[in-house]
Length: 236
Image 1 (tube, rainbow, N blue to C red):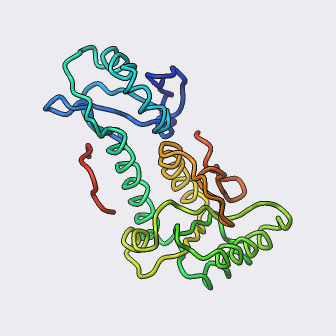
Image 2: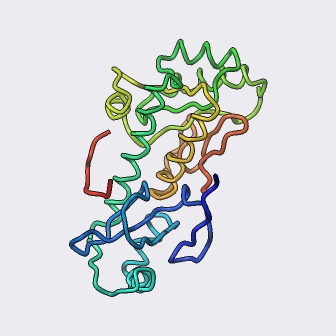
């Protein structure tokens, strides 16, 4: 069953909850990210990127919007709210990668991914931020060949985390490249990654792997368009 759309309290634009970020009030009155939308009570939804949120905080627009959404002015906006949100979204995305890995829908290792790509089984392709250019190009070419899209710009997405973080998330050693071989799993990962990458903003560095600014997807799977390690406090 599809969840009803929500409105961003800052822009009034409507979108699926999967593309927005829910904010909720902690018992002590602090506004904290509730990225899994599990916290009780009233919530407020935002769809802006980090730069837009920081501007709204500086101008007092977020406080006014939250007061209307929560129907109270008794709350505290943490100074590091944008960082809290970014960390919560990162954790959520890495947790999703771990879940899909345990479910058997994720491949690691260049040879295994290349074999799946050339046989037409690859649905999504991701790389660590410190993956080599040559490795990214080789797997992208195999993917294009296997999906009969030679000459297109189909390629993997370089995630903004290095291989030690990906290795920890997947519970495997030296994870440099990640291949997804299940269409539904690729969609679930796309939603979690899209929301995170949209919020933190585009990577201005060009690379042979697609960056967050460019997006990347398998045929039929949404890309970055908008749409694990506990680093900061958030709602569970």
